Length: 145
Image (cartoon, rainbow, N blue to C red; front, top):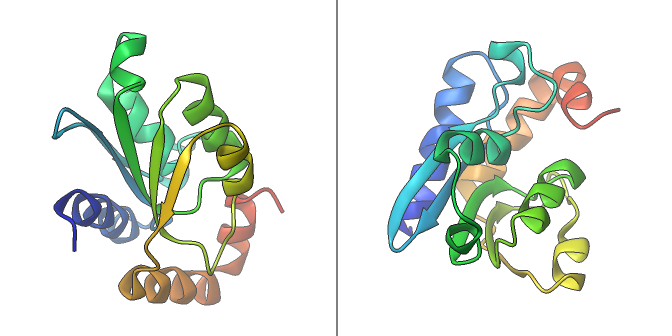
């Protein structure tokens, strides 16, 4: 397993351990993680802190050139909100852990020139499936249903 993806998966597990939704993300620039985060909607009472949004927030303010030369790793296919942030900042590549439990706006990313690589990590697939089965109301809230 790619060590950057493992860092995103570790973030997802951290979120699950905190009682939240197990989705993690890291932003990588120049071969280094510059931002990491996990879904904190439950923990922070936030309506926007998905994993990708938390990773971007924790990367802090960056020049456009940093985003435009970065890769974002996320354990789950990005939703429309996170897709919008990826497009807004011009992040050219997204590595997705899985899209079997939820298919986000990957086509929108691709149609706007973003490279999307889906690895279908079985551990991530199993973790999300169990979470969705155990807490369907929390999951539906997270995806706006």
